Amino acid sequence: MARAEQVGAAEGQVTYRGLRDWIEQVDKMGELLRISGAHWDKEMGAITHMLTEKSKGNAPAILFDEVPGYHKGFRTLYGQLSSLKRIALTLGLPLEYERKVDLVKSYHERMQNMTLIKPKFVDKGPILDHLLEGDEVDVLKFPVPLHHELDKARYIGTADCVITKDPDSDWFNLGAYRCQVYDGKNIGCQITEGKHGRIHRDKYFERGQSMRVVVLVGQDPLLYLLSSSPLPEGISEYDFAGGIRGKPIEVIRGPYTGFPIPADAEIAIEGEAVPGQVKPEGPFGEWMGYYSDDVVPRPYIDVKTILYRDKPILTCAPQHKPVDETGLLKGIAGAAEVWQALEACGIPEILGVWNHEGAPATRFTAIQIRQRYPGHARQVLHVASSCQAGAYNGKWTVVVDDDIDASDLDQVLWAMSTRFDPVTDIDIIQKAWSSGRDPTVLPGNFNNRILIDACIPYDKKLRGKFPPVVDVSPELRAKLKAKWGKILAST
Image 1 (tube, one colour):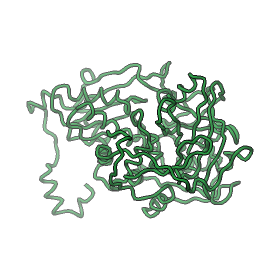
Image 2 (cartoon, helix red, strand yellow):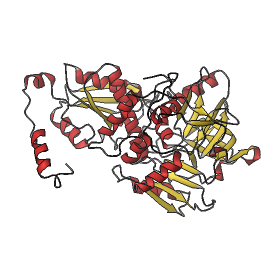
Image 3 (tube, one colour):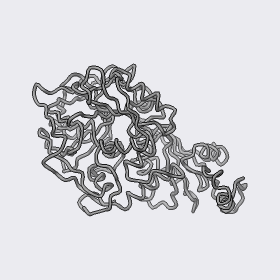
Image 4 (cartoon, one colour):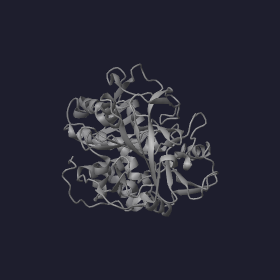
């Protein structure tokens, strides 16, 4: 992958400009639902949950307006990326695919052919419409939701981008970390060990230094998607977004932090975290579908300034039991990075990678390959489960043959049921990277995971000794589709 210093002009295919233009395009696609009058206290989160849980990747984005107790025009947006089409729109990719895994393939191919582009500083932008400082600072000026019935606090940061800077370089990282509201001037920031923002914070705190931070809670969905992606160390999500767009992200300098803040962002919160200053954080209904994280003292952010544009939109991702937005967007972004890691290790014939939505995210990863040598399948399993994109909170990693669609769970289960032996085709990894989000987490934030070789045994495949599959040949399929196109259009 190109480094950010190698800036070049790549042709961008992203067709929208900023969150508001994205919303307009989603509305034209018929995937936006507008709701007026829903309360911030549990109603918005529960409505989103109920509309998403059985949607199978087709839930609408939901724009809530006229929130009781708040000015009209102070809105919240839920479920931005809970459909495959909206993820494709956000990445500037084609909207229709024959197989879900083809979306990951298109994203992976885009990553191979793009050049990272650094952000461009500008003097103006709608994020500068309003600036709150000193006694005016109040994050509850916005309709911050109580997302779930058992949450004990309102969370302003869910579909957010927390911007931190490495103290030893010019690297700015954007991560999606949850932010609890304590009061108008103090918000939490929960960051799991090993995440880039946590590494930055640990470095500052080890030196006895405070860490400045910006929390975006209304931004281009592309930045949010990338903030949830396992990008390599030292690669800024700003540079990656610029590469996808084919031009730099325009940013202003934060008045308190000096950090780059998107000029078209909706809401930006600047502050600092101070070593030794902690508050009890949690509980929160998390992306695995449980209130599984203990309430523990965690560093919080002392808010210094708030910037926001006229009629701001607060972006939210309530997170709940699958299927939900977070699992889908993390799954697609993570699958593309797993694919990248497999090819970077020189492993040939990777045909598809998919993180199944019900798992969610990287809890059930299926990789489709064309076997070329003994041990090929096992090599894929171990790299996919141990690379950066697959290491965090994984559980099941499955490899299947080229005739199995990795994104079709029925086909994957068929392979696991007919090409898999529980004695010889399982490997176990112990003490892997986990977190408190996992309800079965082991002491020390470890978990164990299972690797499933659901490929036809290579020696039998090579000698043609495995029973043939009952199927319709590609040639007959093409002939019948040509003759019976209308009837077979969906096959």
